[in-house]
Length: 339
Image 1 (cartoon, rainbow, N blue to C red):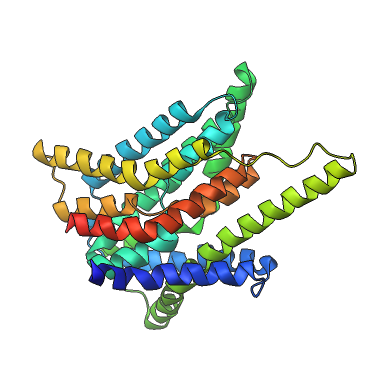
Image 2 (image 1 turned 30 degrees about the horizontal axis):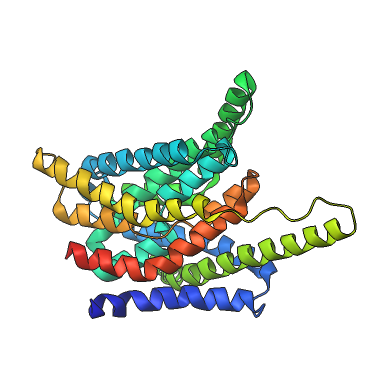
């Protein structure tokens, strides 16, 4: 177990450094969107392109991995929506709770961490999970989040939200970098030397900046939630507001954390083992990769999506923070169990 901790510790340490930098305002909150832009539009696409181009095409088009991952992701979304909707949580909050339970922090954290643990052969299954979550899981949850409207208005809102999600995918460079990497792998093309070196430099920057940014985003969410609560208290004292919104109860947070870190990876492992027993051509090494992907903490960008669509961002941010902190202990246990 100690060798696993020695590999994972620097990754979580960089997250903690980003959190501390933003929490103490050494890193201005206004700078965080710039870090996000660099990671999402430059460094991370180059890293995915680099891994995709260097991965055999058979691994990038592994239908067994896509099938197991897809079934489990959709099951998690359906289960969380079904069991968390109540008088406090409508479709909007339930849908983003489901997204934060099913969408691991694969891009920012999973790719560099799992490649460091398992080697470059882990890149193929990881890329498949990223593509599915970007195209299917996120679009489905955004569409479900619009069902709070009654009758045809709700259905129209869901359709509109799905279209917006698809447009977001089209302008997101990550799916395109994955597609280009698949094309380069299939055609066995080599990029020109200067272009390849430029991509390599950006790709090498992806891991530390992305991890630092995760911590900064989590700190920003906590600080904004606290400032919003303080502003609401002042407004209530002056008679100009209704007081601060109540903090999400533990019962609305803890079950989703357990689904993300425990039930999701167990579901992927159980379904994968069953599929192998039935003769599905799923390599045990590929199954181990996607189980560990499922064991990652929740994706930090779900908090920004929840804020954009008017969901309870405080609840989503707490889930992301809790899964990130808990994963420091649970993720090495998952690695040890699989070994």
